[in-house]
Length: 217
Image (tube, rainbow, N blue to C red; front, side, top):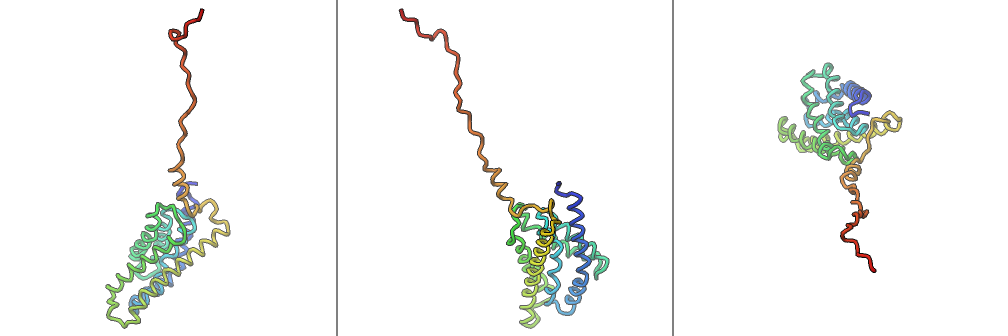
């Protein structure tokens, strides 16, 4: 099966489009909170990770998180506030999801790697929203709520994505699409495979007639 087979593309499209349409209420909630209570935006921010995380956990292939996230963005754009301008926000998330796996050469897909993006994303968006919405001017509990809800929401949806991917795997739907979790062993084995030993067979050279011992009388 090729890396981008028709079946793989259709599977990414199903997850992306489905996730984008199902998440439309979350987008409205996010927009409302951004206006009324920006320190609570973490309640809705985690959903942006869901489609891409499902694809990464289900297929364990390079680029599927980016593609699925962007398909979710395009599917939801006509029905959410901001329309297609919201795609820029999805683009940041799509890149963020791929980076941890890309740094490992897309060879290690164990659980800890999936949680790197939520941690980095929570730190980045806490700083960004704190500055943009002047969260420092709010009460202390609101200042604490922003990073707490943001990190908690992103970790929750990452965990949920892995659960959904595991359920899909059990149904057999991922057969032929899902690659192994740890592909480092194959790479290391290939790099350290012993080279063929040099031949130790002896070669005989024809005797030199001139060097033959003289016959004894």
